[in-house]
Image 1 (tube, rainbow, N blue to C red):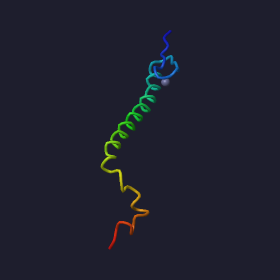
Image 2: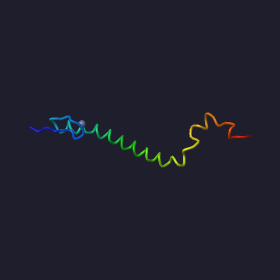
Image 3: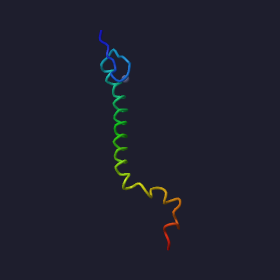
Image 4: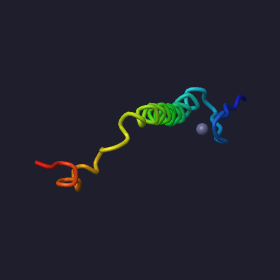
Length: 68
Ligand SMILES: [Zn+2]
């Protein structure tokens, strides 16, 4: 009798459909992690351009730089 074991964790299933269904949950997580990593890299590349001024200018900075 065949046992299908998950390559991502230690769970085993007696039906391939069950395993496939279960592996999907890992795929979602992996996909999400990969996407987050990709976004982080994008942010890091943007950081050079966009680093200063974001958020800080709203709270303070009025009057320090803006002289009218
Ligand atoms: Zn698993």
